[in-house]
Every structure is written in C-alpha cells, then in structure tokens.
Length: 212
Image 1 (cartoon, rainbow, N blue to C red):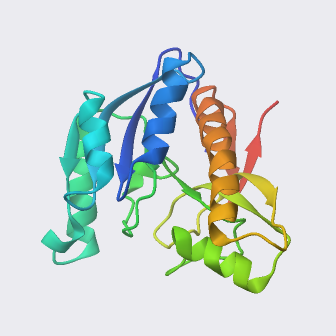
Image 2 (image 1 turned 45 degrees about the vertical axis):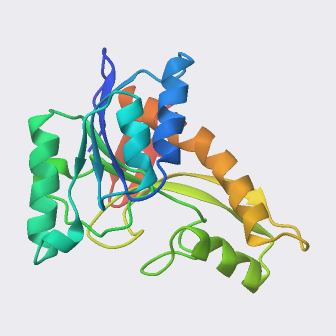
C-alpha cells in the first residue's frame, strides 16, 4: 500500500475524546499555511468533552458518537465510519481518541493515531494521556517521545510511521514530560499528514517506508 498523491487539501476526520488540543494544532498549522487540510468532520466519543466547543467555535461539523450508546465495538465503529464515508474523508486521525474501534477494509491504512510515548514502550490498553507520562517518570527512563502510526484493531499496534524522541530528566514531573512530548507531537503529526498527502508513505509487511 502507498498513499496517494493529492493535488488538493487533505480531507480529515478528527476523532477526539478530550480537550481537542491536537485538533487545535491542526487548525493552527492550517491557518499558518503549513498544513493543507480540510476538516469536514469531527467526532467526539463522549458528550461534554472540551474539544466539542473548540470544534464548534472553529465552525466545524462535530458529531457525538458515544461508545456507551452501542452494545459492541462493531456497531460503534460502523456508526463512525458511516459518517466518515458520508463526508468523503481521505484520512481518519485519532487525536486523543480513547475508544477502541474496528477498522473496515476500505479504511485500512487510512486511520492514524498519535501516542505520547515511543511504541512499543508504555503503550497498549490502559496507557493513555497522563497515565503514560506518570509511568515514564516512575520507571526512570531517560528518553520518551511520541509515535504516529497507522491504527489497526488493537491499541497502539499498527505500523509505525514516525517517532520523535525527547529527553526525560531526573527531576522531571509527569507534567514536565507531558509538555515536552506535546511540543514534539505538534510538529510530528502535521509532518506525517504532509507526507501522506504527498504520497510518500508506503506499507510493506507491517513496516512503513518513507519516500525521499
């Protein structure tokens, strides 16, 4: 699989569960002329999360599709991807989206996630948000960072596209690490989106190859 070269803005669905900081970063990059995107759809996994207000303030179409309203992952996922198809998005971006989804065949390698650690460390079920940075500090590692990967049907498991490392100092609190990692995320995720839109990402047997 190789991403397709687009000679138009990349159409994104942005899936959120919290404050919408990654969505805000995408929109800021767009406003600065550094990211050629359209966001026809934002999906929130729970009502009342802070990202909904940010999406609406930006004039974006925001739908709430709550996991608790569905009996199983399959029905929940079906509802999400039906909306994505209706909006004809090129790519689904998980942006602090905490619910597991099952990805249909027509969206294989068209769903990306960013994780606030260097996969395969500090990842998988239960490792999300501040819990990741708490675990990093508790373990005493000297390097953390973020990972952008294609999502599959397991937590933090699909092919890794790019990673960015940051130092972890002995005096750091989880908040210190979180701030440093988020700064790296704000650069890495848009860069991967640019690579995708340029047709430069190829997946070969669960490994990605980035064209020059």
